[in-house]
Length: 227
Image (cartoon, rainbow, N blue to C red):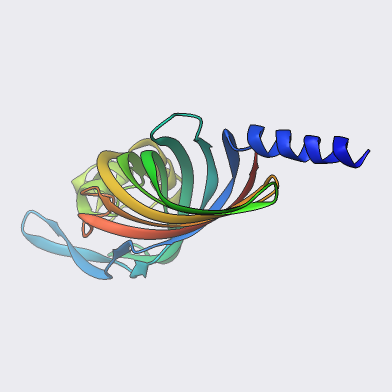
């Protein structure tokens, strides 16, 4: 019976080393400063809009990795980021305060290689790895006058028109910004039997996820298991 149990643990430890998946959560050094902009129509100031600063959004998502290849491992991560910010609008007809949110989804495809490993046979292993790859991001645009003109039905409506929050939300959802880039990452993995955890630092070169970011970093904690 003991021999059978040892064999089952041994076989599962091998099989569960090939594929892993789970959940990931992280912190991202993405930011956008606050701003105050006048509404200009025919060189006349007809109102203004403001938005508050946001920074360091939290991300949540999932991951999948394959380490059955002889030299390198393959890693795929999908995460989502959301952070609210306050927005104000004023013209001759209306004054309001609203809360909108910046939303972004990201996909990271990484090839990585083991740098060091320590193993307790049949029980646990600790591994350090590094890698690089490609990424793609889809994020909501930031508010500007051109956006307000479209939402309100033209520049002639900025002075006396009514701001419609529902139309603004629809515009943000339908006009997402799509950008791609590359990244490098360094991580450590701790695995006991089939339960898995990783801590990963990633630096992302991806210009335009917000107007003020041509690169950003994130640190992710992963929890999962293997198959």
